[in-house]
Amino acid sequence: MLHGAEQRRQEPEEPDAEPDPELMLPAFRDYLEMDEVIDYIGGDNDPMGVDTFIHRIDSTDVIYQPRKKRAKIIGKYLMGDLLGEGSYGKVKEMLDTDTLCRRAVKILKKKKLRRIPNGEANVKKEIQLLRRLRHKNVIQLVDVLYNEEKQKMYMVMEYCVCGMQEMLDSVHDKKFPVFQAHGYFCQLIDGLEYLHSQGIVHKDIKPGNLLLTTDGTLKISDLGVAEALHPFAEDDTCRTSQGSPAFQPPEIANGLDTFSGFKVDIWSAGVTLYNITTGLYPFEGDNIYKLFENIGKGDYTIPEECGPLLADLLRGMLEYDPVKRFSIQQIRQHNWFRKKHAQMETPVPIPPSPETKDKWRSMTVVPYLEDLHGYNDEDEDLFNEDVEDEIIYTQDFTVPGQVQMPEEEIEQNGQNRSKGHHKAMCMNGTEAGQFNSKAKTERRSSSSSNPSRKASTSSSKIRKLSPCKQQ
Image (cartoon, rainbow, N blue to C red):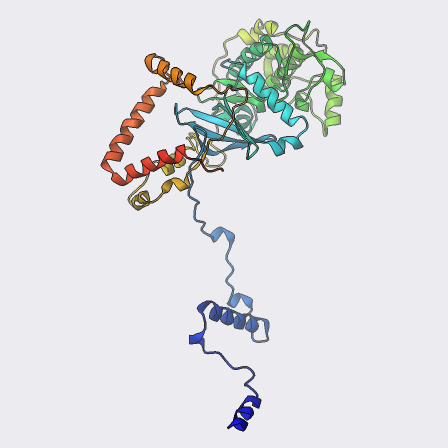
């Protein structure tokens, strides 16, 4: 008996015994089958080629499932889509949930600012300047939020639908009709005169830093390289400049140690007027050295199509000698500036959005509002679950320069506000209370008619009071 067992133990096993497919795990069985296919393709049994088993399709034929947009709330603002991106950071659309005003936010990362020369200093200076400025032709800073953990700063600005450079790039000849250019230039001089009255030299006037609202109001933006003169300074002498090379005057191109800051802005405004009326630049060069060499010489030509009045104004603003260069008062008294120009051509419209091709430039916050508040019959079951987990709240912000008030003073101020009749106003003149009261009544009616909705809104209130999620 023992001898038979030893004999069976010594018998060699079959070398390539096929395992029973029914007893294998499905994943392992699929792995073996794919391994056999690879062996078959790699061997000499492939008379028809690899494409017999691997079907190749063009990338254009692939149908991608669009990603559902999830709501993201920063403080009291609901985030929208990307509007643009610059050297300092991204710019996105926002919605103020208190006033329902459309906003734009510049998102700045501290890590990125450190890699830019004078990046952090320029941002701090811009915030300080914008806080004290209020003019219809200067961009307004609404709020500043800072996330210590993410090292991000959010500069909330008033919303502008388009930039002047974007409008110029949308037409073939890269210029505006004379009447349209005249209207924008008059607003530019108004904003520039206000900045100079506040002792601020912009130093980077160009179409790329001029934004437009839906009603055609021009806004001077990007004061990152601007300089605030000392309140008791004798004159407007400046010593540094970081503006765009094509818009710099000869005194900077020639490397002078000191120069008149106000006359630098006059020169840049003259180059801007030249550009938006002709589609060209007065000075060009293959590189920055050749460009500065041409600017330093001061030789340029004005196209005949500009006419004698505009040509005379351009020569006065692009005067080589800063002392002889036009002042803002001289520009205002010029006949071309004071003339009412007839609308002989079709104005350049605001181009469609580059991403969505939306010619109306609709609010990009709407899909996120639908995710936050709206639902359909298919999503009705989701309200029984914790839908608030999909919403990202970020509330641990510090506002630079803001002093925290004691709780007693906050309660007293709240009682005083309830007694008073002051109403918060939106930037476009709409009373914020109208929207809030209407929204509250709609929420009450919707929650009473839908119990599951009511449960969801109550859970959202609890979530907002509890420690919130980070981005």
